[in-house]
Amino acid sequence: MPRMRILELTGILAAALILACASTSGTPITEVSGTWGGDDAGLIATDTSAHVHIGCTLGDTKGKIIADLDGHFSISGTYNIDAYPIDRGILHPAQFSGVIIGRTMTLTVVLTDNGRQLGPVTLTLGKEPKMGPCPICRRPGERKQPTVLKR
Image 1 (cartoon, rainbow, N blue to C red):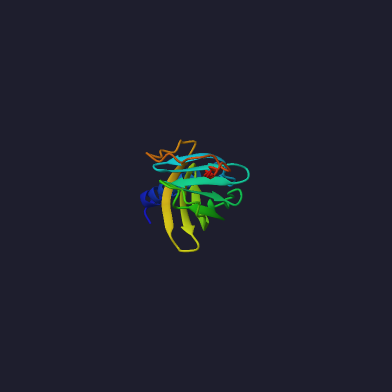
Image 2: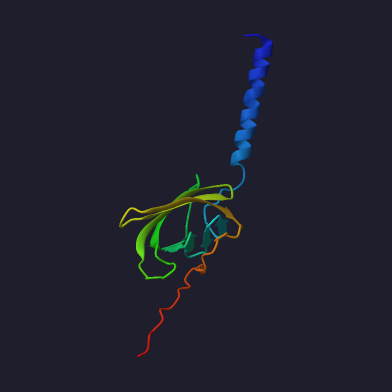
């Protein structure tokens, strides 16, 4: 193999190694917290749960989101697909899953009782959700109390 070809291949391998190391450097996010926002979607995570909106729907996880070292996560919870315009209070069992790469999360919610899927949506850590005209966003644990009609 000519000397020039060996130097060229060595240069290509060195560049590939530098890019590979640069893309994996830093500490991966394994314990999800804070506000993650996207277009018509958002996630607010605390040390005990996460609250999710995709469009005019909402749901909560049954614990803190913990990702593996590759950024993948899956956690169960409940989801309300009829939250707006009239919240009928119907909560479906749901599976929240996705992957985190850097400060970007791809999130999918699947209702486990009927297979309906919401997403995937792309969320960014520290970005406020852009929820459009939907006025239903609340912090985790905050639930609108049903109105009691008096006779």
